[in-house]
Image (tube, rainbow, N blue to C red; front, side, top):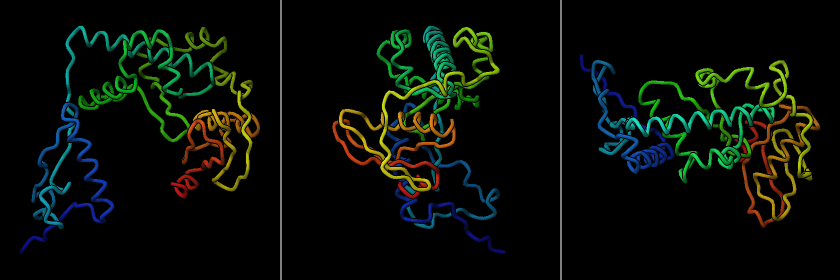
Length: 264
């Protein structure tokens, strides 16, 4: 009996274009990613010969991407671990002080000790390198990112904090509060900027952005303002558009996942 051919190609033109962009992204970073013919094109595994429905030798169906583990030497490894431990401690302290699990990346990067330890390197690239290195070794990441809020935020996993010996005692020392009050300062924080709400509908909110204020600062203040007025976590402000710092006007944001999907 003749086996039926199978494929795993992206079907739509949009999907093919997006797959091409991703492959180019990986190829442009040969020190971090490997792009090679797939080793899983097996007729036994797939129950039949695997063929490209587009007859394209560069189709993503025939390729696989892998992470390259670039090991550090002993001294570099030690310096990286010291830096990451410092970043984790600062993240923990800032998160406890502001009653949140995530902290804007820029705020961590402005810390005097962190900036000195980085020595001109990008904090984001350091964290990404550590995450990629651990992923290539089959180990869990130590830091997590959130790109769905008005600012690029980062957090540290509790397991890594435990490895560093950071626990409830450190939290009390850093914030003057106990573990029974995980968000001591959230409702006491007064936004530095009062944001004028122009209109609001389910999933969508429109506000007036003043000149000289960044979109990120406006939305961060709006989030704090909503937390103050409606309770922490009642509304989540999601950035879907932006205006330049010197531009004033109507700024639209989403307040729910479906709202963000409609606006992006």
